[in-house]
Length: 313
Image 1 (cartoon, rainbow, N blue to C red):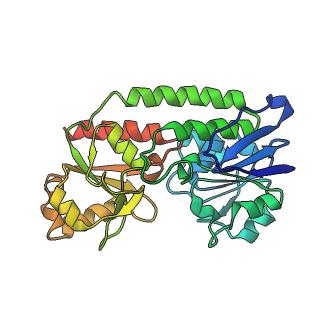
Image 2 (tube, rainbow, N blue to C red):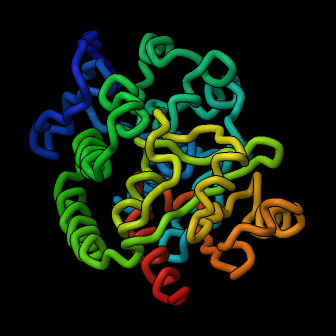
């Protein structure tokens, strides 16, 4: 696959591709513009968020590797997922990726292309290997002090559809997801209640700030995030802030690196945190990490959170 690479200081916006038969697309990805002369045939996905976009578009036959799952793959994609080689539990080594002979790398988080992991995206393009970073993870397009909307979900689906020449599938998926998002947004099940979102940590809790996907998730259902005035997507808080705010409920993130059961047990055993109203009254809800990011499961997250809030009542 031959790539023509032009550096641009622009935000991510997909550009209309040629008809699928021509298999050519020009896209913008986090300030850079790339032209694909033909659709990739040997893609590697890095992060579950990226993997699920490919599977939702039925592109597992164009994948030669995947890595870094956060939680269980959903039943509707499980068979397709098992057709794809797993390169690593977390990020694979650069040498492992090269050995798989990819022509496209698709990441859910910018950390995939850090020096500690796979290195700069431009280095891969110099090798003729295309890249795409999930729109919501691009700081250039979405500064960390500006709240996100659900638009990045559509951007990713449409852009990957253009790159792989499956525009019709992409538009059908967008229509389906937008309908689900619209339906979920009218519920407002959390209106009038405050929430602390607990991802991980003990001495210092890792939570959410003003402007990421998880913040959008809880605010969409009407909840007030106790750290909505803190700049950033994921942030470290102090337990003092949690205690002072005494939230109405606690949202526990279920993830391989920190289970919801572990976090609940920690709060219930702590002499101070155990006295919070939400802990005393057992007002906990649990969400898988994959349902909190702006990806294929975000609408599931809204439905899941709405149902659990209704059950708390």
